Image (cartoon, rainbow, N blue to C red; front, side):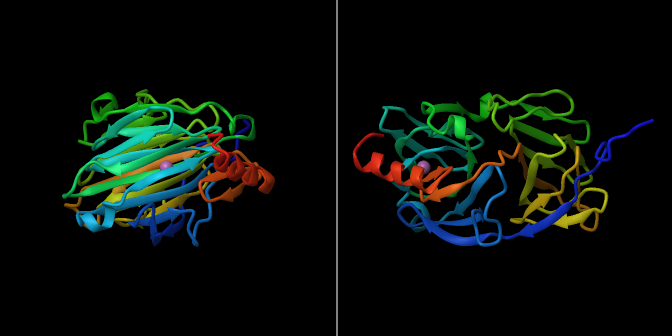
Amino acid sequence: MQQNNHENSIRELTNISQGQRASDGDGVQLTRLIGSQQIDMLDPFLLLDHFESDQPNDYMGGFPNHPHRGFETVTYMLAGKMRHKDNAGNEGVIAANGVQWMTAGRGIIHSEMPEQESGLLKGFQLWVNLPKSHKMTAPAYQEFSAAQLPIEYADDGSEIRVIAGTTDKGLTGPVINTHVTPTYMDVHLPAGASFNQSLAITDNAFIYVIKGSIAVGNKGNLLSENQLGILSAGDKVTVSTNNTSPSEESDFLLISGKPLHEAVARGGPFVMNTEAEVLQAYQDYQNNKF
Ligand code: CO
């Protein structure tokens, strides 16, 4: 009987990172977890920022008008509200547990501003690369409120909010991306619960712990609050709550995608395949071609 080496292979933690403090937009304080000194990128993911503050000075400046070209920005809120507005007339507010999956494609100019003057603002922005064939595609939005995102409830009390991808029980998230077929799940585990998820063997995948701590894979290596853990290749992700801390519940994101294996040329808000294409993006922006 022949068997593929990777079949039934459980993914383990290979790299743990806390990210680095950074400031972006008009002085927004955040933690950069991908696109950082520790993790340059995890193909197809170019950047992951986590913002979390109840101090208005940390977020009030927001992200005034700025361009993007060549990739997608994914904003997922956990607390507070962000208003977005672009130069094509699109406008909306993303609230807690809502997501905006924006394809910048050939270019948009937009602003992302907190829709609040006090209280907690907490969420994530992920940048997902587009393949060369689609970097100049038309801009597009996929936007879903908390009520529009399906949740799978398991007998052990765990809850999986599915933004993209399909759970092992068959619940599929609404976001469509055929380039990297992403998985983006927000998982809640009560104390003693566990989580199992199949992924394509060679997709790149990571977990970010929002709350508590978790044990990952067969080895049960621990990943703590506010840590990002990159996972090895394999077709299964297994997570359980930390049994050295038996009353602890946890929340985490599981994100994965198919690597594009293409050259990456970055220039601030533009991510293309070559330096010349990045220069072209700056010129087009300067010449009001966005
Ligand atoms: Co932006």
